[in-house]
Length: 154
Image (cartoon, rainbow, N blue to C red; front, side):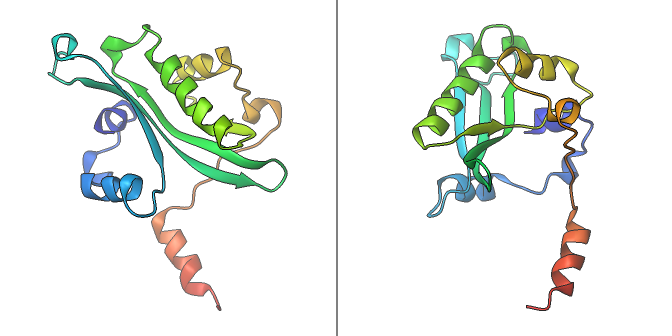
């Protein structure tokens, strides 16, 4: 996650989650996400000494028209291991899990700052809904979320 933050120039102090929260959210009593990892043997470790060299993190969502969907939040492979079908394999594993759970779609957002990521997804059959259907991704940050929640009358 820190590598992804660095790619998009997100200061590490802006990362809200921590290891304990991630463990609880993914592997606690009520898992909120699913994670698949790519790991290499110790003799093939990264320059920094890591054997965990890629991952995908996803959640299940629901669409009123299509039913259950898989939303892939992250798909990451360390740069030195790219081009070796690791990202493709991670994505296929997540798709297999989604299919077994009855999902109809896999959804993922991709930054326009990284056209190579959009091309990677397009080569695997992803459709850019921004261009094709005019859908836009919107985000409500913490302060606005709090303001809306505070205004709730329920």
